[in-house]
Length: 355
Image (cartoon, rainbow, N blue to C red; front, side, top):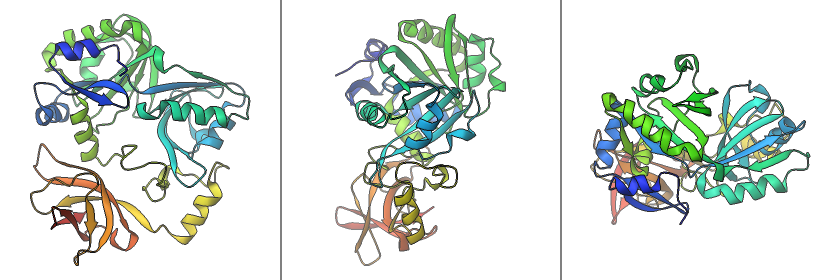
């Protein structure tokens, strides 16, 4: 398994480690997933997300290239801003979802999912008929997500960049904790507020130590991938490999808002326009169980008669409310909000409401 610059620290802190996307990653610390979830919602926590991939795209045709291989309208992006988007796969599915950071019209940074780094790298190279310069810098960066309502106040102690002046989905490259050129990005995968920090990995320990020094007064805690999953699911954020993949279209997944047909030509545009005109046959929905239950990935979703209408793609019991929530694809006829569907758990049908 691959490691991150923080692997030894996680092990020393007693984290439960496991393979995630080929990396030895902390799933939870002795604190436990439930408490880690609450810490991020109410205070501040730090996640090691150094397993994520980073690609640089540079050159005169950088914008044209990105317009072609992604669904969102990159031309609307201003320097210093970020954009959520996806790579359509030429067959109606999704290669990956990602964030694009714009430095200029000739320089962009793409941040891709850890499990898709090799696939994405092959994909962008295969479609580079625009003569742009591509660099896979994934092995050069460490990344920490500092998330929670107290994150910005705490982080401000380590930089003279005015973090309050960096809006959501914007970034600045600045000095942080004595390290030059740190990307301070007002983004995250928790819905709790905070920043994601990108830095040369040789400075990883310096930044970690600085965070936990100032973090003493804020109750800063390390948070594992288990709570990262529960936090993102509570906010209905998709996880690649579960809620979206090579077989799901952006329109089925509720990602029509990042699919800009009028702005440009892009891979799968005609396919997706046809799908939009005809209507999708299934939709990704969010649901809450009406009885105490945990809707796990792969469980069948049924109608009142027990007929299969779809399947669960992500599910947990929320640490805060103890309500079982999940996401899954269902036939379009059952996708309307307030509809009661059923999760099949050990041959029992558990009612769930689409929200």
